[in-house]
Length: 196
Length: 417
Image (tube, rainbow over all chains, first blue to last red):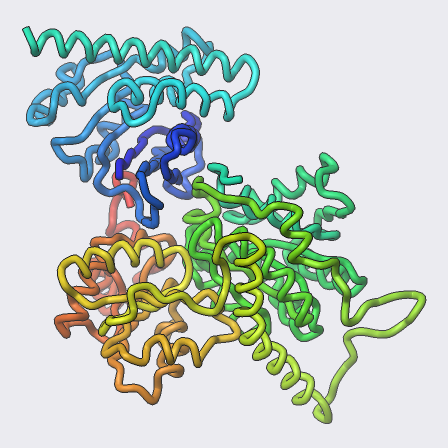
């Protein structure tokens, strides 16, 4: 089982992100489950959502306590919420920011993690460019696909297309694809740096 | 066709395929998505003929359902928590009159303190109202139980409440195969009321009944509920042959054949319990699970048989009768009164407190090593409790406990579960 926890704020599409990721996994023939941290429906309030992906039926109903991957949609939460709770050093981390982990002050904390599983991605900027609105959720799913390989970009874009129709859907697909390419390029550069 | 959809959506589409003729509800979380979706289907003409009636309260919602059902319409509504309490007088009336209304209860805690999250306090508050109460373990079962509920309700002329855990199921997105329209039509014949207000054949419904016959009318209701214990397994078997999957029934056992310790529970927590049981079995503990799908009428014989070989039974329940104890625990104790079983009650998940596999495994570990008390509040923060008790002991004007406890707790935004 692969478990993903999303952290963001009300209005950033945190719940929709988990739902779209679960649909992407479902479309690939996997079992998946998405659910929100219930009740935090106020704009701007910290919101958590969860997604599980497995090759067999998922029975658990507990929140994702030990995530395999974290998607942090709002970097200001780092100072407010224990976003890394339960994450092992084997985990993946994707943060929406144009800063590096060192610039965020996380360099020391993440030193023992696998470097290639940690990425920052300027998802809000990408969203502004493609959507004209600061909605990073679909963008980060593209980045997640490139970072973890848990789902393909194609499944992500299909799931986005099922959720958002018309221009909004197209723009989100383009933004997610851009994030996928950005993250894939960063991963390639990292591979080259480590093999050289 | 299996689709990845929200539980509420799956229930709404399934209810629509049961062809209700009157749907009436008042919005309350976490039920709202169900009614919104049905309302949209009626407006779009996808569910026709059906009248969707907006009302000003839950009391009106159940009252309109009663009127519609008495006029011969297939009636559906949904509510949760205080919504159920607000309609409670009409809830009793629906059962007392023998009207086959189907209602979804998206289980949620009851205030005060106000709390929108999941537990089973609302279902337990309606336990004695005379409705059949079915509990869903998954969203697939939540959808399927509605098809069974309409059939059961109309065969017996009794209302049926389908309980699904609020948020945990209603807001979870997972694979659901919404029952096919042709299969639903084959399984659920059109409604033939046992009693109907028909101007061509005038009758009255709702007579005042005095001491001369009240006992008999009540006893007849009781017999109809007991009939459900025979009918539910038959319908579950018919459902399986029509739809090609198991849903409904009275109880479901998991890994109980050689189990010396058996956990009993209602609803969606059964999934996490099964994961915990698998984990303990891998360590050599002989543990199993009995899930109760039909809570009212209570299947005493089936529960007694399922627990007959257990040495120890742990009832994990999301409700608590203050000053008494676990509600389901009392029913299980009654079913097993003649057996030499050590019975433990674990109150868990109140007001949406996450029930974790880790805590469940600890409970099982305590149980098999003889360390589990007769009543346990799962993951209770005793420091917080003692702090407030000390405040009450030392200050006359100690203030409201809820506010004091929140203040002692400090910020909770950093919590995940």
